[in-house]
Amino acid sequence: MTYDPASANPLAGNPLETRADMSRALLALFDPLLACFSKGNARVTLNGGGAHFDRAAADLEGFARPLWGLAPLGAGNGGFAHWHRFAEGLANGTDPAHPEYWGTVNGRDQRMVELAALGFALALVPEKIWEPLDARARGNVVAYLKHVRQFDYADNNWKFFRIFVDIALDRLGADFDRSLTRRYLQELEGFYIGDGWYRDGNVRRIDHYIPFAMHFYGLIYSKLVDDDYAKRYRERAVLFARDFRHWFAADGATIPFGRSLTYRFACAGFWSALAFADVEALPWGEVKHLCLQHLRWWKDKPIADRDGVLSIGFGYPNLLMSESYNSAGSPYWAFKAFLPLAIAEDHPFWTAKEKVPEQALEIVSQRHPGMVIMRAGGDVVALSSGQENLQMRCGTEKYAKFAYSARYGFSVEADERAFALAAFDSALAFSDDGLHYRVRETNEEAKIAGEVLYAKWSPFADVDVETWLVPAAPWHIRLHRIRTSRPLRIAEGGFAIGRRDFELDTLSASGGIAYAVGEADFTGILDLGSSVKRSGIVQKAMPNTNVIVAKTLVPQLRGQIPAGETILVTAVLALDDPAALLSAWTRPPKAPEIAALEALVREKGVTVSAIEAPGQMP
Image (cartoon, rainbow, N blue to C red; front, side, top):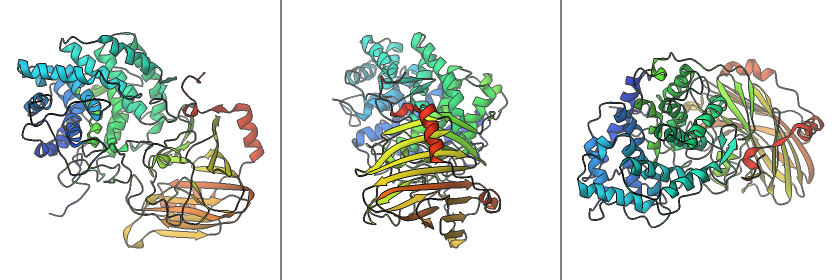
C-alpha cells in the first residue's frame, strides 16, 4: 500500500465533535506507542534521535507524557486496556534495583518535567496506577518523588511541576515539607503581569506557554485544591480567555509563535483546562468550539510517521524548528488537549452546541505580548514587536519577526551564511558581504500606541533601525527608518505560501513589486515609496524551513542602502484566495507619514509588557 502521510495521522477521518470522538482520537494517538514500550514497561523508546538530556529521561518522557490525556480518560471512566503497563512501569522506573530505573536526580533535570504528569495521574486516577502496587513499590514511588522535589526547579513554569508532585504526595498520604509547595506558589505569583497574562519566568517573551502551561496548570490546581491561589487562577483565566480567543482563525488554526510548537494541539489545552476546572470564561459553546475546531485543524496534517507515532515538527516532520530539549517523546504534550475527557457527558461543555466566538473587532491590540492582531480573509495575523529569545535555536525567527500568521506560520532559516537564499518572511535583513546577514533579534525600545507598534533595534553596532508596524487589513504596512555608517545590502520578505510541484504557481517580480499565486493562496509585497529603489524577487525558499508546509514561496524586495539615513515603506498582503491578485492586491493602502506615527507613539505609546523587566510593571 502506498504511504500517504496525511492518512497516517491518527486523527484522520475523525469528526471530533463529541466526547466519544475525542476518546477515540486519544486512543488512536496512543496505540502506536504500545510497540515501543520496554519489557518492564518503564520506558518508551520512539527513535534514535537525541535531546540534550540522557536517554533514560527521554524514555521517561515517552512513558509519562501520554498520561496528560490518559489520566483524564480514566477519571472520566473511559475504557483503556493498558493501565497495568503504567502501574508496572511506575514501579520499575522508581526502583533503583531494576534495570529500567529512570536514574537518580542530582540537580535540575528533565525528569522533574515528566514527574509532573505522573503526579497528575497519581492524583487523578490512583486506583489505576497506585493501588495495584505492593508496599515496596509504593515506598519506592514516594521516595523517588520526595528525593526529586528537594532540588531547585527552573525559574519558570517548571515550578508548577513540583506543585503537582506535592498534590500527589498529599493525596497518597505521604509526609513531606509543605513549605516548599507554598514557596513555589508564591514565586509563581511573580510571573503574573496583569489582565490574565503571565510571563514564563524572567524573560522578554510571552508565548503559548502562557495558555498551555501557566494557565493550564493553574486551572488543574484550582480543580484539585481549594485555596486562595485556586481562586486567583480561575479569575485570571477568565480575563485571559477574552484575549486568547483572538489568536484563533475560523478554521481552528492558532498563530504559531514562539518555542515548543512541536507540542501541536497542546495549543487547545487552555480551552480544555477551562472545561476540566468548570470555568465558563466564555459561553460553553464557544469554549467547546475553540477546543474542538483546533483539534480538527490537525486532522489532515502529515504530523505522524508511517506507524502513527507523532513526529517532531509542527505541520509536518521538521527537526530544523525543534528545540534542544525535544526528544522523540516530546510531541506527546499534545495530549493536554484531552483534559475534557475527565468531565461527565452531561457537563455543559459537552451538551452545549458549538458556537463560533463573535469577532466584532477586526483589529485587536494586546499590550502584554506586544501584538496587534488583525483578520485577513480566513487568516489571523499578529503584528509583533517587543519579544526576543536569544537562548534557543532559531529563537529570533520564533519571536522577533514583524508578523506571524495562523495560515502561513513563519520560517526558520536553514543557513546563516546564505543571504541570497534565505526566506526572510516577515523580516528585514542586512548584509555587509552578501553572505552573512543580521535581522531583528532584540529591541532597545518597543511601544504600542493604539493599533500601531513601534520598535527601535540594531542589526549591527553601527546601524540603528526604527520600525513602525501599521495594520491596514487585509494588508499591513511596515515603515523603517535606518541610519547606518556604511552601505549595506537589504532584503525584506512577505508571507510564505505553499509551493506546488511542476512549477504550477504564478510568480511575478519587478521593480518594487513581487507576488506569487499558489493553488489556494496569494502573497505579495509592494514598495510604497521608499527613499531607495528595491527590486522584487519571489524566493523559492529552502525546503523544510516553514513550520506549516515543507515547500514555500516568499515574495521579497531586495536592494542596497547608502551610508546615512534611508526610509523604507513596505506593504504586505497574503490571502487564502488566489483571486486576490485581481481584487485586494489592486487596492494597496496609502503610506503613512512618519511625523504622524512619531506623534502618535509619543502621545499614546506605552511600553510593551514583554520588554519590561519583572517588577517594572505598573
